Length: 311
Image: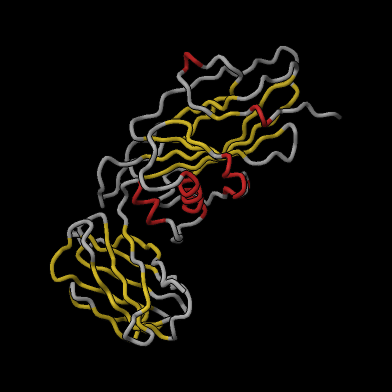
């Protein structure tokens, strides 16, 4: 049987006031993210025949709450009657906080504007989402909805832009957080843009110490300690920091893999905290170490991933 076509070239994704929703559109309701968090939703629109006298859904939309922005990417069509894509809603907190932020979940309605539906057909919507992905959530795979090459056509639908981060990184980071709780390369950048507790720790090779690396940790909150956990292929033989005392310990199944710097005094947000480590075996590639910051209440925040050293 011949399929009716849902023309993706005429599909645009926009958030509009309800009074302006006169064009053909399909409303998608997603969970609004909490402050300093994000929601990822995958949608699938299918064009199907309708029974006689079947009603068509009425499109509605609502302006996003303050500080909430909506991004979208549409996957390349494999079928003429089906469109898939992902919506990412982000909520930049007004200030950095190390406390857990919980609010009663709100719903956002996003209008997916598209070409007029052919007579005798209707659009059905399948929706799967993961709310507040910077925390515990059910695994969600964006790869089921789009490929990395599709990001060239991604766009921001509504709300303010996030500072210091690209649109593609926002979508990819939200998808990485939705897929797994494991840290990833841009997690610190993504959390920082949302005003979530975050930090960075880039390494460079030591110019004087064989197998040594030097790093500088910074956090966007008051920190009292810094922890670094080696990957399974490395261990630490020495550590030092002028900002405090450094001690090496072991975790179950891995010897000398954890370095903890206890600061002499709490460090204000943005303070540079130097750290030197001697690593075994030799440093030949970027070190995917995990690092943590400890706030003034001694809560361990993380993990994030170190970066470097450059090769």
